[in-house]
Length: 256
Image 1 (cartoon, rainbow, N blue to C red):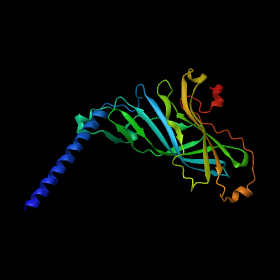
Image 2: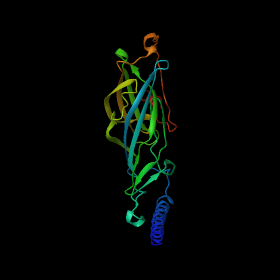
Image 3: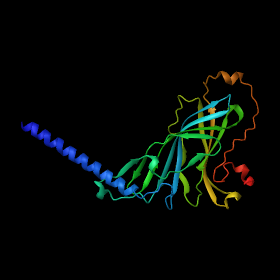
Image 4: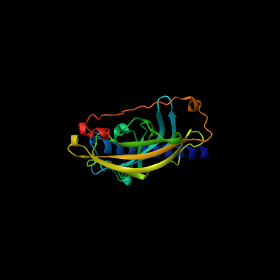
């Protein structure tokens, strides 16, 4: 009987604690988002961006390189801060991108898709987001079947004066590259943040990250297309045009 009473008291205590924590999170959510407008950029924000390359594959028929990465974003939204002591010591929340202002980064010369995974929002307003993404792009082919790829990634609509850009760490990493299962072996080249102004856009600077990667095939890679493929020269003009008049392709800046 005594054991039953102890068990009942413990169960009720745990339920009370969990209920209190849930109520604290609900109260915090209301505090953060009742008057929050995700359409507006956070003030004085600077995006830390980087990517970890996981795998790359080349399609000899289409000449497209598919690159699988983990993108890495960090920024601070000062509107989303709180004192943990006021909310049952809640230090962080997992928040869907649907509720937040989010960076609208795109791969300039190619096509990209990313999973809209949850972010981690900390009590100081700092936000971390690491979505898996896939890039499809055309890369220059060099000697010995080396592929020279240049990834240029940045905000599609927001200028550098409004929201800045800086490297997350080194900007790019091969730490998680799947060398044993991927047909291409990568080597990192330059990684830098570039800023450019465009005549069409009142000479306002836009920032992007440029990441150069060379790929070669594994020595033991067996690819039937490699020996029987007929090479053709293609002059691809793979342009994208932003809806806000900022040209996505640098070579066309004078057409604005």
